[in-house]
Length: 500
Ligand code: NAD
View 1 (cartoon, rainbow, N blue to C red):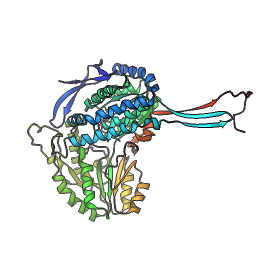
View 2 (view 1 turned 45 degrees about the horizontal axis):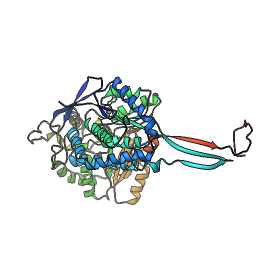
View 3 (view 1 turned 135 degrees about the vertical axis):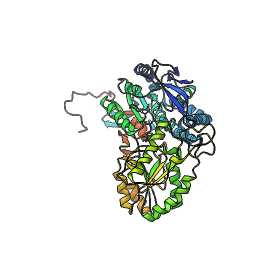
View 4 (view 1 turned 90 degrees about the vertical axis):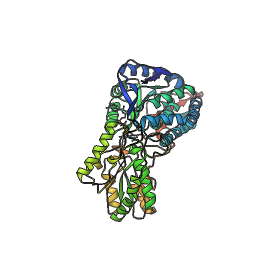
């Protein structure tokens, strides 16, 4: 049985903890490896390594730092299929979807390679007589990324390319369900020339995270995962005086106006609700048609498409949707469907009826796509994040009612409107209280040079991830006021210095 370990000082590190957890191949429903679960002693070793590496790394010319990232980027392009296969095996998303994930992560590396320009400071001459002033951004030190199971490569890459380019050393604590990709990225960074200790990986769960949160030498936390854990990380890291950005769960709505292109909207919903088996924080899980006529027409288009979904092993070329991550998650999603039925929502397509019959994959964690109609805003199956291939329709009779539905939900990660009307689209984009908005775009994930983040219970902290927000998060400002003696006598000044 393969045992997946930590990565410290550019080498695999066995650590001291003997505790392990099983890693599964969800397409087959069988154990593929075991991962070690790090403890406080393992965290101490990783942090000491990262702390020792920081002075030289932070002082290395930024051009040299980004040249290493540039080489890493080339390796990613060359070996993308290898990484995508690992993601597909451990997560269960299709190979093409996994390649898309690697590409979106790689784009952050491309952004980070431009760091010499972004780190240029500001300078003002003669802010006083013979006095100049400069403002620069400096790295924080040892920073930590804690990431979820659903994007084993992209989400870590929202963080570490920018953290490293700005001069920090980085410890990645990946999800224990998908631990291999982190080790591969660490090896490729080493191959690209990254000095020892600049990028370390600590495997583990709650104990490792708590040890990191309480470690005095860790300066900042980037977290992506479920809302209860995001809240806990934000509160604990803040209490311990650390900088923190913590992205949480989601329930994303898509409004379909009567003037929308309904075929376009139906196709968009299929990809956004059922792609990656709904295990995306930007998945659309609630469709909000405006008027019953739109709801009926949309349902007529959706039902045959959902029934025709090609569900199969993640690496099968024909699969449009793979399995869920674990048996427990499959049960959780099935239970939410049952809850929806009991609450009175009308189940039009029941994904629980799906059975995988491909030889060797019968025990995989598969479920078909489900469609609910007449979901109401007070139902548990509406209020909570299901994180599976379940689309609920909440019928509304006006644009204002649809917007009120969105505003009534505690999550505010992403949302979309489908319409041909510019006035409506503009009003929506301006007024909606959600962090990421799509106009005729169902999954409005910002590009690497913009920034990713939700509002309300979908994010805790001030800085969104990547883009300039990432640069701001991983650096702190220093302003230096400079005077050179120019022969003029300076008497002691007791009043606040001003230009007079
Ligand atoms: P999770 O919260 O269970 O785990 C996330 C990370 O936190 C993992 O590394 C895990 O090991 C660690 N962790 C789990 N429980 C912990 C605890 N009690 N104390 C300390 N650390 C703990 O999330 P998940 O199931 O891996 O991922 C799915 C969730 O992530 C969904 O809610 C999804 O919406 C969210 N997500 C959000 C975004 C976003 O950008 N907002 C992106 C991707 C996923």
